[in-house]
Image (cartoon, rainbow, N blue to C red; front, top):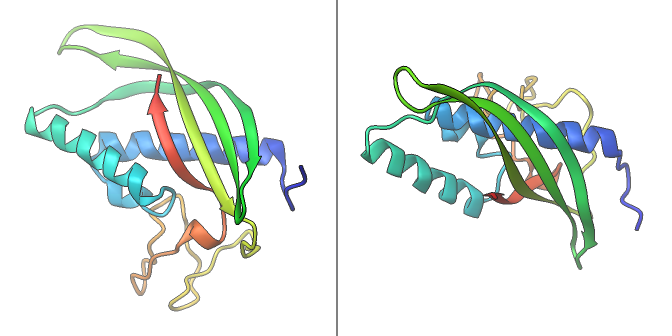
Length: 164
């Protein structure tokens, strides 16, 4: 299967970045900063998890988080898109109480999808509203005009995310 302009290392780096951005957004309770990386189902699931934590007056805090391994499991061609299933193993320190710290590992299944007729974007991404440079890692929202940079037509979007 040939995916146009696909580079394995670049994709794995992108997936690791999305993973780190998700964890940061959960810790700081700023899910709106990852809305452009994920589809509505993933966003709503993460939002529900965050609401449960908030309801119980808890905050998910990780320290020393790292990617131990990221591996593509399967690439599928759908009628209008490509899907990539990925397993990502993360290592992190976790705080279970105010004094107890421990290290752990988790495996995450991530599924990314990109449209076949995606728009090839240059390295410097521009705001669709005013043309200013946009840092999609920051929040995908233009600091000048407030327009949202929608990655759905331009890059891989996380369509499924689960911790095993």
